[in-house]
Length: 219
Image 1 (cartoon, helix red, strand yellow):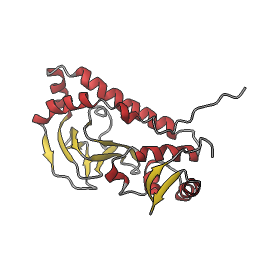
Image 2: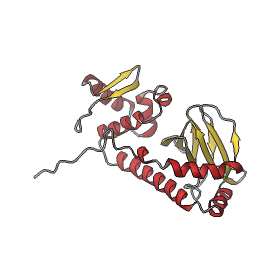
Image 3: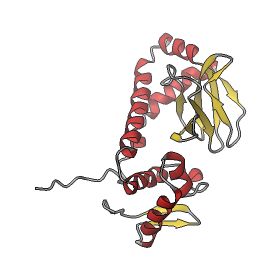
Image 4: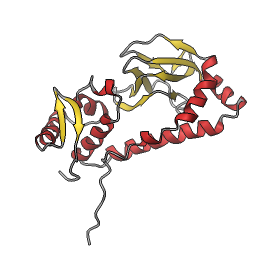
């Protein structure tokens, strides 16, 4: 008997719905007094280290993307509120960087100081919730782009794009969004998108994703 496997690319499966907003806001409330606001513009890059000091970043408003420095691939995108840097403090700071994707307010403070504030204010539960969410998003992303067909990867990225803020969706083409996050070729992406559009499964205008209808689980 063949088992019916439910496709992962549905409109109700985003991990972002489980974002622990209250806990993240609690962390930002305690970390903000010791942070300093950064002057940022769209497309600016933020490094996790400066003068041999590792930093964490508080995203108060807006949307940013986490890139791998070696090839520029987008590993994650996140909207406010969020705290970057605590979960990656043991990672080589030159491996990743943050890019401002829309008008955002960001502040920074040393990771060591952030750790001290968390300990002094017994914020372990809030920190644990942030780390669980972060780890879950990383695992979810890896699971859904590894050992899958090109069609499945593109469908997953379509739903991820729909969960982005409207300002983000309206300023990036579907092709660019998928290419920035996968190793798929432009021709493969455009071919599958064209077929989905022709079938009425998605609606695009000038390459911008507008709506997603029911996407078939098989290609």
